[in-house]
Length: 330
Image (cartoon, rainbow, N blue to C red):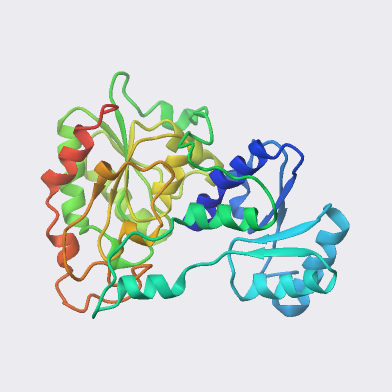
């Protein structure tokens, strides 16, 4: 989800700066709310587990796109097997095609154990922009402005929030455990935020995560879990009303950034140098430990070879709390 969310500000910039262009985003139906409200941006659902499954399904998708969308060129922002197969069909039709350069060699050098080349790489936003530049379009993404305005918060959440209190979002989970701050320490951060007269909303996905966050809600006052209780579109509206989002290197960091919500991001096995920071994230709002072994992987999907997860254990709850309370919007 984070990768898809990072395409949104770039696509909006392309459309704003190239008024003659229309863009059709082809992706999983779940992600459609991310692109709603962007002028001349159309969404086409790819049902990869049903009618668009396998090579035959991708060919069916190709034929549907040719029939239902006016396409002059293909911008592959994903560069995976499915998108490569789809490109083959379009290439046979003579379409102009541009593909993202993921910088795999550079990322391997950044994350290797020995002879690490520790330097910032091209951001993912810039890599997306380069794809459109290959197609001859003007793209300037230096404008770090919110993509969307604040949206109406669902009534079921509005009634839970006390007037005058800051609303702090906490997203304690990530796809891989090496990117997660220890849950017991994060729960302590939540307790301290509540003690300082803030309201806290908890974000997560899946049954196990929702169960953990529901228990936090049950145990603490002014703490409410929204995990699994709202549609994706409703969650986006809730996020847009936060005073601050506290997130790992995960999707919620990117979702909050789309609305200009200040983000405090906590990084463990991964590192901002790999280029996956959120739109407009300020360096001073990044929480991370200075360790020789970081980053040990691009996505956080490799076990800690030290065995102690020091990159997260070294970060105290007070450091995180100081970042949150030190922000002008909190």
